[in-house]
Length: 110
Length: 113
Image (cartoon, rainbow over all chains, first blue to last red):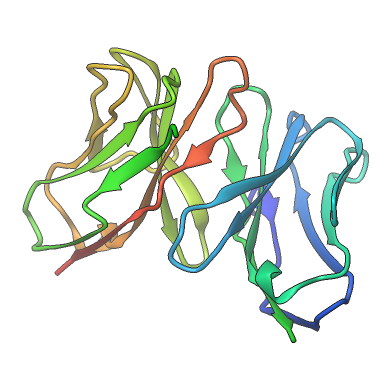
């Protein structure tokens, strides 16, 4: 079983919809949680970074961490075609070594 | 602007050849990382370095080596390329103070025939 599980999709939604992306994990030592966005044939770019449990909002993006359930989520409000990308969750126990999910491919249809 | 670059962007090589992929960052970051990305596996850590002359093995280090002679560069060497090493390789760096915030390069697509 992988330390971090993420549904690879693909996920396709209409423009303007709220998107929910999720990851589960098994290692209770993870304290740092990140979401990366990766456009086709590009490197991942850091989108959201949270420490421990709770919510963090940045514009249309909200990251949630529930350590008791070992579950993290990324919500995208008012989704745009430019949000079409692969979204990767990543987490760390503090030793700087990130463990990534498989990535979810998202398409926003105009 | 500071950045992280990788070269070459595409490489085709033959089984058994030695290949070196370059990674250069201008952020003056202490930490540098090499990952490979494959379908069904996401990003997996190959090697990493916390500073000059420091190198460490990651999850999938067999067949790869790195050396860190300065802050800016962390070249990745495939000693004897194998078809299983066909992949997209990403270099990343992070500052000592915010080590989990890693910034990625554009990637190198390597094909081993």
